[in-house]
Image (cartoon, helix red, strand yellow):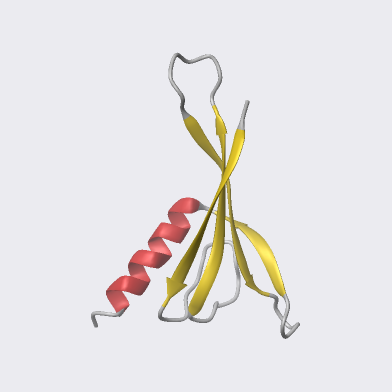
Length: 88
């Protein structure tokens, strides 16, 4: 089994919420890491997502961050909501 990590920067133009995080997160750029692993035993290469992590400002500790596990669908939903809010 091989594991790979994909890094991307996701930018929110408005404050937003993600399921599993009780507080509102401020607008801004966020580092998102998606870990994937291969599914062995197939005749072609297939990757399965095993974790999605976002780096956010730590609550109550100015200048520090924490990395939290989130659902990839929840992230996609938050991005869609942010994009549609820009057109209101």
